[in-house]
Length: 96
Image: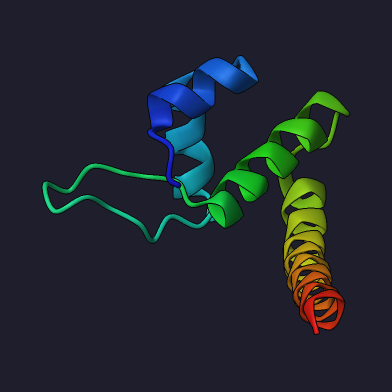
């Protein structure tokens, strides 16, 4: 399920302007759009937005934030993919 930018910024307590700024800086990927061109956030993209928001609240800014996000997002996504794969394997084993 995808979310609109408005839904996401309300949940996180940030402005849409700030969200657009993070995109412009390359901190957050956005690959999903409606046929009409409106942005939609997949769960993976939403996790990236949440990570950046939490880092900002912790005081990270500028290059330090860019470096940390560049390291963490791929690692977190790999961990989630591995956990989902393991969960699927466990589900299959419990059925059989």
